[in-house]
Length: 272
Image (cartoon, rainbow, N blue to C red):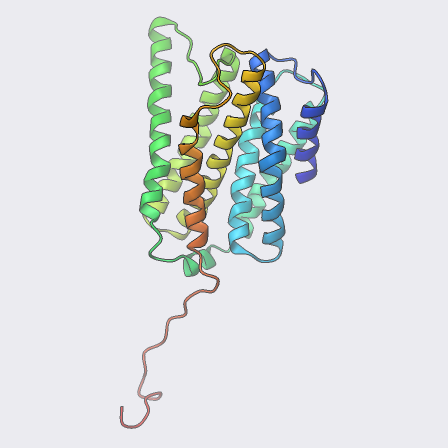
């Protein structure tokens, strides 16, 4: 999976004119490729190495980075025009999906429950996950209803073609929002799965927001009207989510706290 994703991103950066899409979409794909090489691949590689060595924190980071890869690659597989690397993108996407399933199956959720610190502010982090998900539902629903009434096409933050906007709305409303909402509920309830997947969700969404910032730089450099290469207002979301992921990861103790059994008649010392 690492080799396939790395090869696809490298090809997108080195092959001139690889993406025959509209200029804004092609620039966004190339920005996504750079983000994958600079952030996604190093983080995923470190997580895999740590997970192989038995690190629970690295295993949760691995799950989060695989979720990021699945979401990111979905745009290439389902939203791009045919290009020379289509089959490579498909192979990278499929391998990411299977790796995600295997990583979840291999997760020792009991250890997560035993090692998670009770003082970790999981409910605050639950709210930080739920708020963006709720905002997406409201904004996308308003745009969809407005389209049904007036025929005005829904738009995205970047001036993408309508087909790409449709894909973003579909992926977010059918996959991203339900998954994040479920994780936020479980995190609020302080379940072990909520803690584990909450960590992964904060990491995945936070890294993709960094990805979006890099995409904007490429889109602005392509001369797309109305897009600035950097906006400080884009920083709080990834900063908050990645900080939340860090808090959750650091909240996992190195060893579980063992409860001390109460003394019984057989174990009491004389005179006690």
